[in-house]
Length: 365
Image (cartoon, rainbow, N blue to C red; front, side, top):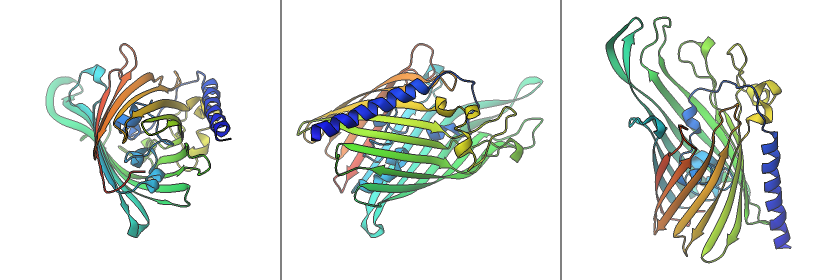
């Protein structure tokens, strides 16, 4: 009976993937959101599995992928990730850093999480519109600070919430036509849950609605841009698990809930949560599919190999790439890296992420 149940779950996940792939057909391109750096995958482990992890995540990166999963974790853990972003451009000052932390606090009945995300966009030169004379220089950057909490609603269901402060400094001055500047700050919220059914211990299912918040205003309210409110549904399934071997399959479906109109305006929340799904907003055609697998060897876990695939509709970003990764664990320390293979001249191709993890005081998840 257990074998039959596992087979049915595997068949269901495969069917979901085929169904949504079939639904993704070319359509008219739409504008996106402000502060898209909030959607960059923060860790090497999930990045090596096609940038999936909403259902399968079981480490500190759950602060990003699914804060509800933190409820199942004990002890403390910290991770640091670094990547030279868009390496095809050859810019050394274009990079991305991410810090995660979690800690189980019994007195609070759950787990707290925190993260800091920083994206450096490099140095820019200020000139007059009618003259190449340099008037100054500035550094462009964006960052976000996140605090979260997760607890068990039941023995099988973990729920979590994040509160995030976002700061975007694209330019310290406005243009000759605009009085404002390219600097703004705002806040957002994430709501998430992860389900680990006792009847099918190999399965985990996650749901995360992230970056819920007001529009971002750089110059004036009429030109405000929506946050990248993102809905993720994810599945994780352990295909193999014994004393020395563990093989996990991960599958995520993600949909940006942003609704742009032809005149450049956009719907605000909560309207965009529904209007993004209509035909004009892209419907299912804007669903992003990311999937991958992870193999661990050792008792306890020692060496990992990972592979994945990321798919986005050609008319809505056209990001398609393979991912590869590996990891090693020793005592309380871990090291992971991932690599994106996206083809010649693709700006994401050859992106490499490095992550360092330290866990102590508990059994993990």
